[in-house]
Amino acid sequence: MRSVPAWMGAWVYQSTGDPKDVLRLESRVPVQQPGEGQVLIRVDAAAVNFADSLVIRGSYQSTPPLPAVAGMEMCGRIVGTGPGVDLEVGERVAGLGVSMSGAFGEYAVMDKGSAFRSPADFSVVESACFTVAYQTAWFALHVRGELGPRESVVVHSAAGGVGLAAVQLAHASGARVIGIVGNEAKIPTALDAGCAEVFVRGTPGLVDEVKRVTGGGADVIIDPVGGPAHSVSERVVRFGGRIVIVGFASGHLPRVRPDLLMVKNYSVVGLHWGLYRSRRPDIVAAEYDRLHRCVSKASIRPVVSTVYDFSEVPKALAEVESGGTAGRVAVSVWPATGDGGPR
Image (cartoon, rainbow, N blue to C red; front, side):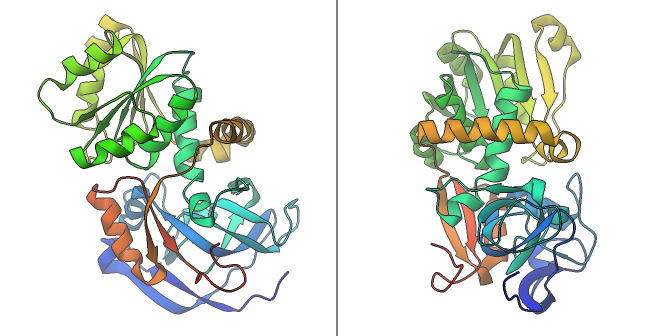
């Protein structure tokens, strides 16, 4: 194990609530040591996910025990390993912290099954933004959505984290991709990612336009938004199509209508990618290899719009929560100079 300090700086919360109210930047947080099947990394960069705020607020599907270091997704170099690990000190990995926490700290512990070797040509910021969004999008399209050759895909929030990844991956798989975004400013980002057409959520005539450009309806619909977006999905899904629900960024649950399910013979399925890590790690490993090959072949890269300083974590979380971002938001944890820092 490399020389590691006993203390670190980290954004900690003692109770759940609004991130701006409960997060505190502390300078003497104990550095956790890796146990069986775990690695300790020095965090170079962390992704900022909408789910990070939900976890801090206590409204996510699962939450860590408190007090906790905020943030779930990161990239860094291994500085220590526990027993039963085939990764080496010095390797760069990206993934999730233990108990979905730790990304907004200078050091973090990962389970070996949550630490993925980064694509070699990615920067640390790109690597930090890759794991959750792209594996969620991949599973939504290919595992739950069963995307077939030359099918059509509608992606809600097509300029957001999971949505943008889904657009890139669906386009790389040969699908015709239609994007729906929150405002006109996000249209160019979705088009650049591979959308054939992009529409603004709430525009009059949206359903008719989507049906027109898909030739009657979409085969697969990816929905990280929930609420009113689901009613659009129900009306534009093709006979025998699949609607994949991956989140509720709108703050409202979708209302599934059984009568439409029967009339159009479509399916509504859910996806919580994190459950696959604990219940079917074999599927995660196999699909990550497929995802990695697709990304390499298509030269796909995460689209990062803003990189915040480590001192600005609450500001970064607020920007993502606002829904106004196009592309990913990240935090640079270590300074750009020095051993182990972002390169």
